Length: 356
View 1 (cartoon, rainbow, N blue to C red):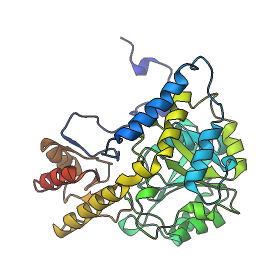
View 2: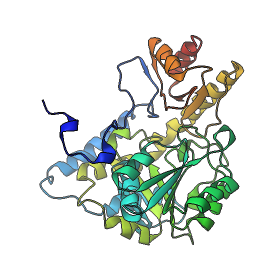
View 3: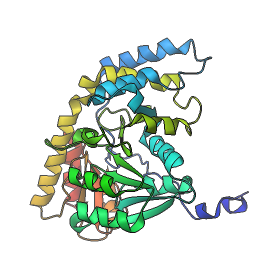
């Protein structure tokens, strides 16, 4: 039987493993930052009707530029955004891949402040972009001075900033974004996948888009909207950025069914986003309880919590799994990440933590 080693795979891909968290059948799955609440029945019905309306014309290609969907997304984001400033794709991963295809590539570099979203270096690898792992400060924080110093050192073509950051959870001080924008020679991408869960007073990078044509803000419907299976990510930026990613996007990359389902979900956003406050309450409960038990916990503006286990994280991960709770080992020695879910899931997690 032929193995991967027998094929002429690119040398820089040899020895790597595909991205992905373990998919195990356990009572409590809190490892992928999904929204634990299923879609309400009225929303399910609305999406079903929207999909049914598309079925008779599946013999035709969808709207190549998803104009109606982009208009809906612009309306949701606000900030005076127009359809020309918004682009959508199959998850924010594809959005960021398109950005690297347009602004990165061979002979160019992308920089991110680690630990951060582990897909960014993989997307860089896949697009032939040199990846530069910059450093975070004490307790995974990042100051404007720290960020600018490393941008000046490496002069990357693309800078990734995550706010809130995955896996640590904390949103960026707006001063960091402003300082990097002033110094970065290329594009600055602010990944706001978890923006809807940020604590009150947190400022989105959307507020500083005007006058900054090299700034891109990426979002997703996977988390707060509970639309992970729908695979819809999007960006907001200067219209010229949208024109640039249209040069590299695949033809008809968003199916008619995806566009219809996402528009139906957006039409019911008040209902879908109704779970956000409940998830935030469980996140804050996890943070407070773990700290009361003497564990170090990173501040979180997301729907997950990074916590220190006081020993080998792989052993701790297996202990929690043995108690029916699946969390994420993100490769940080001594730390694990848990998604904030329902009250019952939090109960199960906090009970399992006692075994550590």
